[in-house]
Image: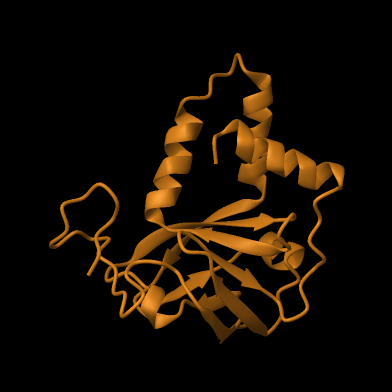
Length: 165
């Protein structure tokens, strides 16, 4: 078992059942999106307790990036450093927040996405989970084309950069 970053391990509520992946989100898994926009996280990637993740549609990747609690904490820490006197970073927070949703992994290992994220990522009944080591990605078998050139995609990338992510 590997504990959340910064904890001492043991009985941490964020202790992760990791099998052979040593705490990293690795591999490719297939899953289903149900009629309530729920997907079941692969067993090797689940935490032992109900856990809150941050899911964000990322146009430059054409997928939903899911940040585990330790990464969500990094995002929250970066966001807490932004002051209202910095409109560029405030805009960055607004842009990222509008395309994100906090999701809680229930006891069955499911997270529920909102309609906006599902629509933007063009998620259908079949979904693909791709490990990204510290994050994982959810995509459709026929995802939207990765967009790295539009104003919206460039704004998202700038926003992430502004926050040091």
